[in-house]
Length: 117
Image (cartoon, rainbow, N blue to C red; front, side, top):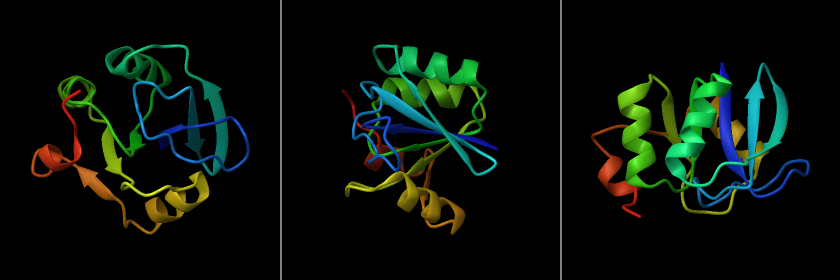
């Protein structure tokens, strides 16, 4: 499974970026290995296209607009997980993912989590 997470920096154990479409960096976690790549795209839907190209299976977010959420849901089977509002590091969020304590975002709860930007 390949997981994408928007992060604030390319340093070791970065903090999750609060804004999905404007995140300057994304961490990609696959088989326990972390690779951080610069996000050259601007705007949520363009970032989603980039993530589609990367072949991700899951996405962990703090905030996301309605347009990228809808685009993901209509164009893929990528699972979206909500990391919450609090400041959280990559290591902490991956522990929650492994413990299955992150909230999966779907149509039953998206109105509370996804923002109209």
